[in-house]
Length: 440
Image 1 (cartoon, rainbow, N blue to C red):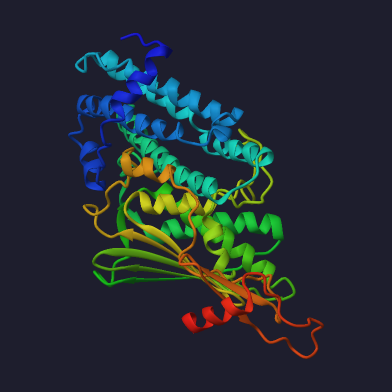
Image 2 (spheres, rainbow, N blue to C red):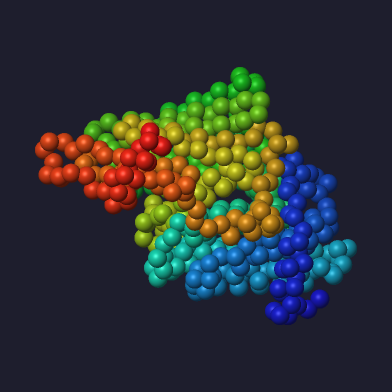
């Protein structure tokens, strides 16, 4: 099957009609068990990968033209098209041919490497868009919706590729011989916590010349004498924790820069019947409640853009994508990441993961009418009153009701103010009296 570029839209249209097939952590383990069958995995992936790629490629085309035509987004789109074409080459290949299976592993490694810089390249596209075009809330909302789905799709595709290539490349991991691909069936949570903490501490010491300590506790409600372990992807958990520790350390140091003693970061790991939760608590002064949502926004970051392809740089600053991507890692297997902050005191960040591998099922975006509707949303009037910050005391606040009912409410002016009288722009005195009778 030799594919031409002209045939790609037809294939995208075909495969996007199928919904992706979410796998549970248990299914991932079964795929990579001692009796793992490379042929079965090959047959599944040569169908599933085009479905996942095509579903998200349909959504890329729904982005605003102004963003879609930026050089960086064009590059990302070309990578996805190239990768789809390379996988489709295997649709009519013989799964019993060992040479074909080897070529498939090589193709997956090539695809994975090609997509290494998707996140910073797409982020660069957002920067290019923001530099040229004015921002509007609807477009920002659409881009936020898309990027959450796009990056989640990417996490899932890399998970499939990693599992197949790590399991069937004929080698075992010498450092972690018990892992199945990238999954550790006995992931010791506190070990990952300590690894992430020490990495963040080393970075913090280099940059600030000091760092807070950690107090780590765990509560295993299942087997009280045992350390907490779950079936999970250690690299995903490490990514989340490293981000939370970086944020907590930076906040702590900047809040207590004139103090000799830095308050420690406290970590509580708790295992229940349904959830495994990790709480990272700092005394770094917190953030205002209204800013919490912005911390998860791809459009909000003011950090200077790092150089794409520079994998040696320290990750102290970047595109500001650390928290939103970390939350996606948590959500990928039906968990979540939440921030609870008290301005003036500190912040609690909580990672929620599923305790049972049967409950840890991939959360995957699907292209359908509901998704399409989200891209067609327009700016609507708020159905809650929005307080005006621009109306000083002594002026009239005007309320409008679609039933042509106007009411002008006079707010008394303090004696020290220099405003005389009441500014009425909406109605005459007679109508005002009628309005008062109807409204009040």
